[in-house]
Amino acid sequence: PFLRARKPRPQHWTTYSIGRSGMHLGAVLNTREKRIGVELYLGDENATAFFNLLSLEKAAIEQEIGAQLNWKELPTKRACRIITYLENVDPLDRIQWPRLCTWMQDQLEAYYKAFKPRVAALDADNYSPEEEDEV
Image 1 (cartoon, rainbow, N blue to C red):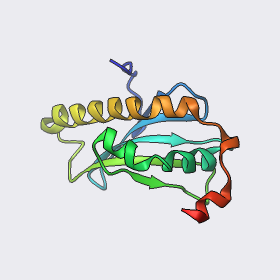
Image 2: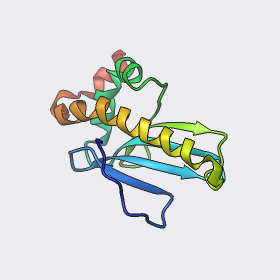
Image 3: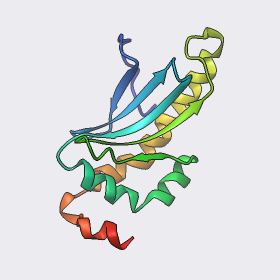
């Protein structure tokens, strides 16, 4: 396994290391919106630069993960996230737990495989805001 089991906590999310400070994989659930999700969270001063560098590989990343991802730059925050959801599920329904846990584990492993080498190679000096306008 790529990720170690985590001690249960009272939050609606848990995080996993991706090998670089300021970034992590996250597993989230939302009982109100009836969905669960897996994300790459970028949360340091280089979040926007790293987000935009990763977005240059969006098609390849989504193909490797096997899903269309939601790319959220979050310009009002010092963070960005790349997330995918499994919608119309009830995280409180214990009968659904095996299916939801399997989906979440599969997604976390796919995210880890796709993002781990890319995250390790990121260099904020390779980002120029002008590149965004040219795309």
